[in-house]
View (cartoon, rainbow, N blue to C red):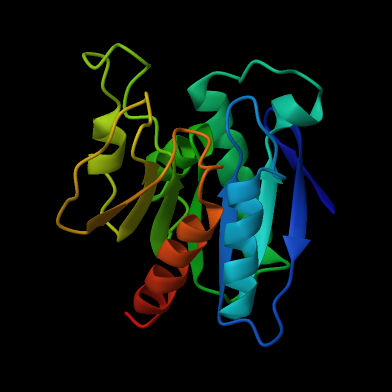
Length: 199
């Protein structure tokens, strides 16, 4: 475990190094969740099997014991600081894929340019608050210019994003938690990762 100072407090990074790593995957957690969520753990296992090192990042608000997320600008600044730290140290020289589940996916999308990401992996991207499709966050996805994979529960109350020119959307059984069919979540990432890394 690494402790990384950011402009908004200390973040923690759970680092899993792959043997002969060819790339790295940096993942963030959901708003009220942790890096031990079943989908993040499953994706980390897939990445390691593909010789991709994994860094699971705990935002400073979680490290400090708070449940409510920090404002978006603070989340983004902390995330960028962690990625830059990893680029200069433990993940030096590796192409980086960024992503996360729910809130973590939003942060990764908003900062994909600044983190110089090769691609973005979104688990349960919250397109809009439940029951409020008019409050769309689709622009955060649309702004990403590198390849994106979205794995979304088919009954997710936070909505279903459309596929795009460089955005693949895979629907799996279940809701926003992605707990119903973790094997299908893993399979989607297992199919996508080699294609992205071959680019």
